[in-house]
Image (cartoon, rainbow, N blue to C red; front, side, top):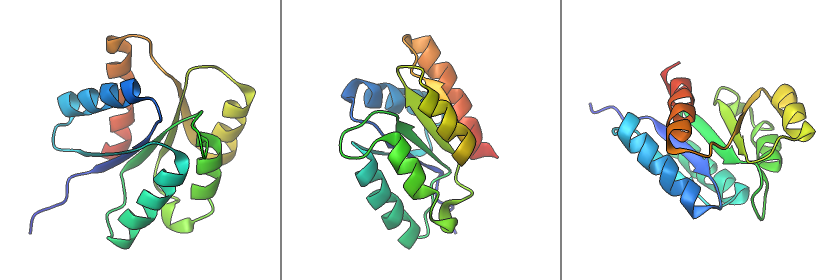
Amino acid sequence: MKKTPPIILYADDDEDDKVLMKEAVDELQPDYILVMVENGKLALEKLTELTEKRMLPCMIALDGNMPVMTGKETVAQIRTNTRWDDIPLCIFSTSASQWFDDIAEKYNVKVYRKPTSIKGYMNVVRELLDHCAR
């Protein structure tokens, strides 16, 4: 029986950031499946769909500031469902903010500053992918 490759769920409204994420994942782990959506509401819908198919992602990465539903709101919703307790959550932010620190502690979420260089982006994605190996 063929094993399903690890799935990463990534929510971000910035097309450039999605392209960078895809390029980084394709280079570092080309066999991984990257599922991308534009906001937290769509991330929750996709997570529910994947759960119903018994295809939980190995990690979820969220942009901190998205329209419709922010990363913070999405994390809070994800953490209300015990089926998703073991999925590592990460938030990307372009700015430092106290509320990122608060949710990191409250919900066991890793917060990353969005890198400004390709090399920096690769390093962050490499660290994110380590969550899938655990």
